[in-house]
Amino acid sequence: MKIQDALRKANELGLDLVEVAPNAEPPVCRIVDFGKFKYEQAKNDKDKKGNAAARMKEIKFRVNVAQHDYETKLRHAEEFLDKGNKVRVLLQFRGREMAHQELGAQRMSQIKKDLIDMAIVEQEPKLQGRTMLMTLAALPPAKRKRRFFSEHDLQHMGDGDEPSEDADKVDDETDEADEAEETASSSH
Image (cartoon, rainbow, N blue to C red):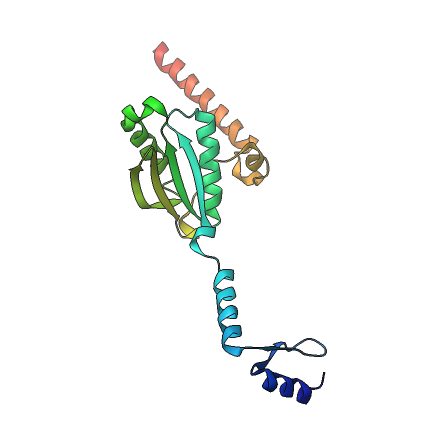
C-alpha cells in the first residue's frame, strides 16, 4: 500500500500510522492508536529486562539432610550465585521437627558459613509457618570463590590445578632425609 493511501485510511479511522519495522524491505507500518502502541512497547521492554523474580533461584533443604545431598544442593547454589542470581534458601520442617527449630537455625548458619565465599546474606533466616527462609545475593565476580565441585567439574579443571609428580618426589626425598636425621640423632 502506498504511504498516502495508508495515511488517509488511518485518518478516516481516527488512528495513527506507525512504522514497526523500518529495516524490512519494504518497511512495515501499522494503523494503531499511537499512545496505546507506546504503552505496550514500554511494557514489553520492561518485561524483557528481566525482573527480580526471574533471577531468584530456590534451594530447598530439610533439617536432616544427608551430607552428600547437602553438598549437591550447595554446589547448585554456587552455580546460581556464579551466574549472578540471588538464591532463596528454604528449610522446611515436617511434623515434630517444629519442636527442634534450633536444629534448623544451626543448618541455616552452616549454609551461610559454607557459602560465605560466594554470597552475602541479604535477608537473615526467619521462620514463616513451617519454613525458614534466607536470601543470599552474589558477591562481585572478582570476590567469588567456589568450594564445592562435582566430579565432572574436577575432571575438566586445568592440569595446573593439581600437584605435579615432581613435587611428590621432592616431598618423598625430604621425608627420607628427615628420617635419616632422626635415626642419626637417636643413635648418639
